Image (cartoon, rainbow, N blue to C red; front, side, top):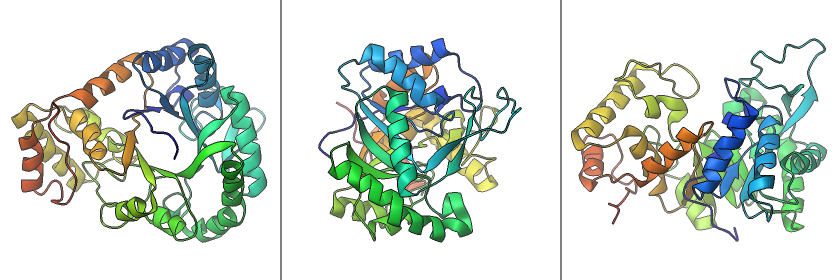
Length: 336
């Protein structure tokens, strides 16, 4: 890539009304808070609220960033089709409570990618998109249909993405996924500039360390880390009695036990669990940015504080000593 991403980015799923409705005023307020705090990387997708997130992000940045200095990433791979007549738009659809009369349908074809790109430009009110990700390709999302959809993507959607990049319409292309295997599979078939990997490099999952990260390093592919809280359990913890989620569902017993042990170490060393969760992935040299979801100004302030919190090196040493992190994982250095 010809640009660097901010260490902390903005995940815009929340302003697409993920799980709950957010007002237009609150959506604008959280984007403004992020901009005022110096965040310059914003990630969205047509799927987030069926265009609602892109529209809101575009409207806010049109006021805040008329020179279009922000780095924007969005995604292809989900076509927006009209909902059935009579659909109640006040009820959750595909996890979003959106007033947009659409639903998303996977489509990795050439024409769908080109239409998706043009539609995203309009919703975002931008003259260009910096990073274009292929959304949720892989077995994690598609199971037995993966092989067929992946071939469609290679023959169609990926070709369209390359044309957009090579023609200068976008600066970088990549995958936005929740699994390691498809990243390695894709790199065996073509080149990528950046990968947005959600939930797979965190305090609870270091699966990319063995092969994907060395491959990215050798190929010059940068990583953006989403899902650093693993769907929330590394934000809420398990000691408070609050409902915890892991990988979009209830956490298994072994994950609850592991998070509890991490929380105990955090208490011993006076460390915030959220700070450890955000700072750990940033220590790896192939990782450019971590992008927690933000739907309220308070979440922006919290993320900024967590990224800057001083964490003693003894905490990280204890995490390794208690086999909560592998010995070969790069660890954050004490901040000066």
